[in-house]
Image (cartoon, rainbow, N blue to C red; front, side):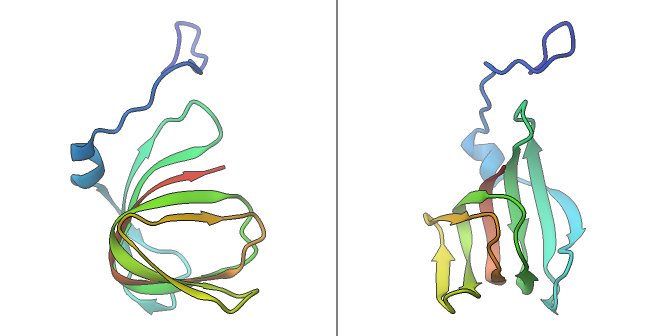
Length: 124
């Protein structure tokens, strides 16, 4: 991902094979700000060569608020289920395997993981 001078190679391809996306992830502790359940995290970060965060994230059941999100997150749900509540509209969406979610900057709401959830994400 880096050339001989230590600079990021912006043409490098990021490839996470299916076995990596669905395999074991690294334990990352309890979800910060959780106010229900005991949502333990597991992650696998991939170096994007940019400021964007890219990887695989898993969380056990539990919930937490998100207030005035500072960035954009896109994610594809690989497995599990969660309810996402949008504070602005009051809308509650249940997401599961195969769903794609975009949370824009300034978004305020809530995640409630119902069944251990795994997603592939980008945050920028």
